[in-house]
Image 1 (cartoon, rainbow, N blue to C red):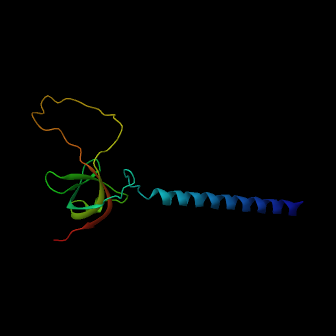
Image 2 (image 1 turned 180 degrees about the vertical axis):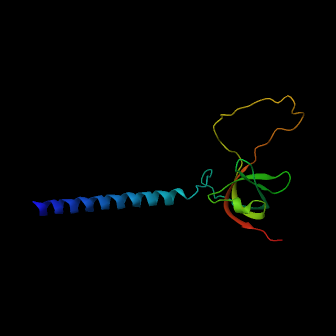
Image 3 (image 1 turned 180 degrees about the horizontal axis):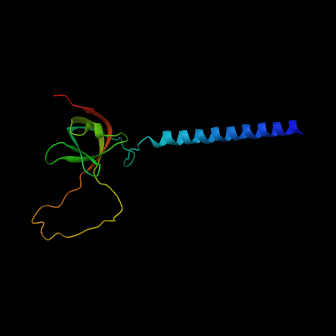
Length: 136
């Protein structure tokens, strides 16, 4: 009877080990697939990646922007941490998304003392595929 219990425990432990390995395999596969950023396209046309040169700046909220000129600014989206490029002149290869879609849930207020300043415009989104520092 004791030998039968040892075989049963051994079989149970082996089945648990196989189950854990299968679950870890599925988890690793799912994480590998999630790390690839999808590229949106219209009518399955080839995506045009463009290069921009400018300075990376970070806002208080932790968002990163690429300032190309005084009038041309892009919000950067990337899978990597861009804080190491904060304040540097960089060359960015990416795909520009001109229209962002998000839920319309906002808190708005009116400041009567604001004067006649322009409304803040939304910067187009630039999905970053490559970034490197530019040396002068």
